[in-house]
Amino acid sequence: MAAETLRAVVVGCGVGRNHADAYVHSDAAELVALCDIDEVALNRVADANDVEARYTDFETMLREEQPDLINIATAQPLHAEMTILAATQYTPKGILCEKGMANNMGEARSMIAACDRNGVKLAIGHESRYLTQIQEARELITGGAIGTVRLAHGWYEQGGMLNQMCHGCDRALFILGDPQPQWVMGNIQRNSDRWERSWPCEEMAIGIVGFADGSRLILEGETPAGAQVEQHRLTFVGDEGTLYVRTEGEVRPPGTVPEDPIGLRIQRGDGSVEEIEFHNDPYIDARHREIDAFARWAGGELDGHYQDAHFCVQTQEILMAIYESARTHGLVQLPMKTQSSPLIEMINSGALPVSNPGWHDIRHGTRIAPFDYGGGNS
Image 1 (cartoon, rainbow, N blue to C red):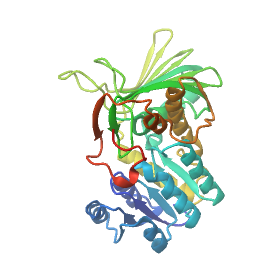
Image 2: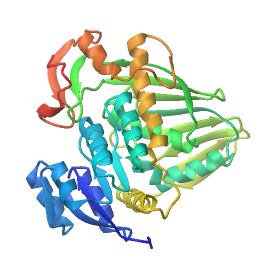
Image 3: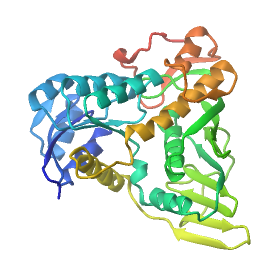
């Protein structure tokens, strides 16, 4: 049991519905209020979790409730503004902000700085770090199950880097033990006016990340998959074997056999194979563990949290560096110097001309005006 039950609030009742549910299942915190500009979504989540205090304005909720814990589950363009406001003017014990962390590195670094200055613990919502499968893979890699890792690879579909590839990048970093990346080189394709969750995104991306020990991480987003490539599978190649990690569904031709029941597979150099059955570990269970640990970390009961922003900002920087490499046509040394979004700079400069016109958001049907980055429609 935690030393005290902390007062928690959630803003954003889309993804935030899972945050709310997790607080209801934790004895380390009490969910006291919800906020959303969409009153239908707000009332639906509040009714489901028996929350009486309901707000349509974020700052009003903070002023009235004075919470210990703040979960920011709004769209990415608002993350930095809300996090910095909460940390500097209301100084809660902890803030958990959903991924993607921010629009650019300047915002991400400002979020961390604001929280550090005010003694606020900041976590980023990469809940995959609390999936059983991912934690077991980390134990295998850090325990030397395949020797020294030389290469890791992940392929993702169904979204841009900041919403989908971020999963593969963050999972790979966590499994590897959160090593410090040294450099990034990559490229993107954006031939249409494609957006995701009210922010511009690319159609395809690829990046190579280099680490100090000479190992590499290759990330692919929506590149041609082939018939049997599985989404959300990570591969780690070591000098004593290869580890295959599956965490979610797979991409297969229609009518083929059900999912592979094996979640972790180690193939060794001598030809032997070790298999660990896939854990049917729903994301909501990982979310429950994430939120409970966050409350206990913010309250001082735990010394650390897997999603501490000081770790997770590396995912943000790698993705921004892929954009920067595409913009500069070269290798990007880390820490990255560019503070603004290289993607937005490329769009505004005409470096990514739209050959297939017609604005479309692959998650939202309409653009929400406050999130306009200033580039206008193509």
